[in-house]
Image (tube, rainbow, N blue to C red):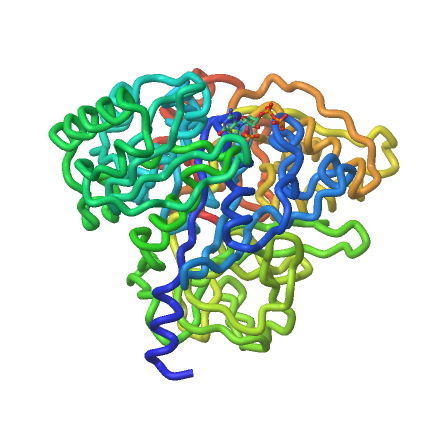
Length: 530
Ligand code: G4P
């Protein structure tokens, strides 16, 4: 393949995630995007909505029991000449860590809002994560088929609470029972909802808002309101500016109703047209450009036991540059080892296939036996390390024990795997060798207990501890660190990589340790092992 073709293929990639508050309609929208992208044929294929899906993310037992065949963490589909990679972000706040990492692997995001609710808690949190990396955002205001808030009020809320400029890309005509459709402001097209059949009618091109077609198709009062509102919106909002959107300062807003397939195609067209192709990725030392020839990538997620029949582990790799082919030799920068990637996987909506080739922006899955970890960099030989994939200090700590004490060793192995996967922090105390598991959200304990029981066949018990928080400790001089560890023996543990961790009983304990040992750095987050 020529350089020009490779360049074209990379520029056609759109790698994105959907962020939303639970129940805003992320699952429904995902499904409809896949329908338009031809990746699934039937609505209803992306099941396990609501709590079941959120509590037991991805390949968890509940989903398997429901016969879900969607490989949900990453899905690839083609539409309008572009290849879309849609990454799943678990909606429940307890999984924010996983979500954060997923957002390091995307180039843009779609923010879904419930038109009756506007910006909600989780939307805001996820938005903050996007803002940290200036991820450009397209907004989809969903559920216009229900009584909703005034569109001006919604736009104003986005602008005020998120400090983001807002440009309507479409404008709703009525809402709830009176919802007639939208007027596409970018293309001057009228889009009417065909309620009986629950599908979108074809867009009708108009010659601006004055076009007589509007008067023919819509009731008089609806046309009058539309003209008036659009005029006001155009006066109040800035014009769409591609640069400003791509820098993360402006969001175009589409209105629609995912469940009725309404507005979804326009959203997808918007993504194809405006969302950025793969972005340059920061690494320690230099920025890697997507059009560089050598292949590079980083692991942003590990999923173990996706298929209970094969005890496999899949590392999800975001390719950052180059044109990858099956069998390619890649160097693993943490260990320095080079290996051929014989069976990389590409994730389609309902299956996973061997990836014969992939480009910067794509997500490939690499089956492995635990040598690949979150944050690892893969290259064709250059020693670089992609940055910005942190590991978080857990906020909740519990001890875990097997119900059968004879299985302590097996539990140790299971915990090691789970820690490497990034699903939880696992610490082994220096004194007593107890396992302490740290998570960001309480629900994770339940999910972990369920996983350890079903995947490793070890029934376990989690129990509360008097510990409040954990900090990785570092010092410039090793002797200093050794002294600190000795002085605080009872509060010291090691993480799964053997890095020292201080387990604090409360803030006072942490503050005192910091005061007594000024040369020690107490880290809340740890960049993944280099
Ligand atoms: P989530 O992934 O963001 O949590 O949301 P999900 O898609 O599961 O949607 C949450 C609820 O909102 C679902 O109803 C879904 O059918 C509904 N919904 C999604 N889009 C629209 C829309 O455009 N209009 C209306 N009126 N409803 C919408 P549910 O009753 O919780 O689930 P289900 O019984 O429909 O599966």
